Length: 121
Image (cartoon, rainbow, N blue to C red; front, side):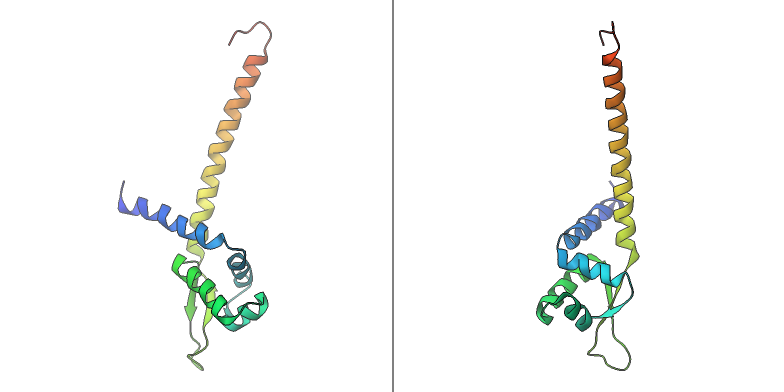
């Protein structure tokens, strides 16, 4: 298996781990509406700044969000979503759905064959 092929599952694991927390999912929901300052996110989620900082660090490390600083104040951190991790997640979900659909269709066909009268299959 190539290094690139191994990287995608590792990235997917980080994405899923980051999204496992409801506060981080809420941050992603808020950032889907546009970039926001860390302080605004903390107020919206009613979290302390240190707690918000920990959640944002996890989201940054997973690659889900990126941080920038406005030119007028380097102390302010603005967060925005990065689309790539969600694209990988969507592709993984589509593949899982395809596999499940194939399995269910095969199971349905098996049951239909077994239900035919006089069929010993």
